[in-house]
Length: 213
Image (tube, rainbow, N blue to C red; front, side, top):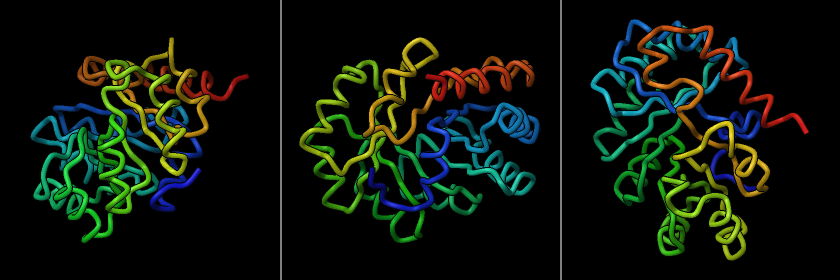
């Protein structure tokens, strides 16, 4: 499997990316600890709340070993905001050439959303070989990714959307899948309720599901 940056080795190792929507930055450190306790030192903090950049900054500053990315990045200005906060990678729900080029200019890995051959070819034209596949379940799930991997053998996918413990292995078993993103390990409700033990347990269970034959 090829990727567009060696920094993705953290994703390859665990095959899972918790997709985080968090509204209280004061919970940043406790959330990071819950994920680490569960066995993951990676997180994608979505830019779907006003405090996303602060959460990224607090996670990176307090837990420097964490690999923290910014998700739902829709513009070049958000790329700058995320990078200033310390984001290790950028994820976008769709393909936007300006977002990709800005990431390349500032030297941060980016996984743009691509679900069609045309979008994948547009990404390849800019040197991108790792793409987000979103929303995965709505666009045919693992079967579609497997079909796309035939003509695009050098492309790695990060499927997200509609994935949980019931269908996780369908995706992670595909050689072309770099990692799977999902909110099921740390849902918005669990984070708001500050049930850190439950988040750690769900993370641990997800890892077990991925790596247990």
